[in-house]
Length: 296
Image (cartoon, rainbow, N blue to C red; front, side, top):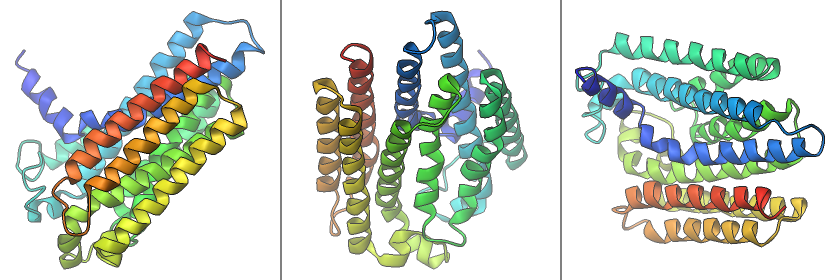
């Protein structure tokens, strides 16, 4: 039990609770892969169970490496920002060297887990790492850093599908586009908290570049494309009513998220970021997976 506080420190370092955003979409990709395989191979519940196990480990290790590296790279910036000064590295709870070793370990475990799935996933794992680790540098030279984050997380949908099928298909890519625009849009909202600080420190972000009002419009536009992609996916795949219930719930929660935040009142950003997005991701994935397996 003496190791429990250390585990808690690292879980806080990587914001483990934020896994709720990416994991449900990865499970959608995995479920789409199983659906495609049902018609071409003999079902293997044990084999799919092991694949799911390694996919979940890939998600955990990749996200841990990415978040740990972000906290390591931003440690000096975080120390200057009142909102982030209490994070584990600037607060001295976890040393910078410890965090870097944690990143390296998780990156290696991610690649090992990818190898256990199939060779294609293993060969693509360095590309995924380059995107999710490279994101942490982008705020230093481009305001489009939110889009890079969206790309990095959206790879989970395609990766989970590849884990099952070993090939690329259009439908998981459409879901990946929806995930990409959704993440980029809500990350812009979250970055509104640091608009003034980013300008002072000459850090790049859409809020620091465009200001609050125009950033809200960009976020809304991205989420419009999210909803459009989900509706296109539903029509393309000829999904039934369960999918459309999930899509409408997701869309409604996106609209609610934007109703919570305005240019004159940013006090409910955390409610919009965590609660609305978390509910949207979980609810949508449940209905999509039910549609795939119960109402094909």
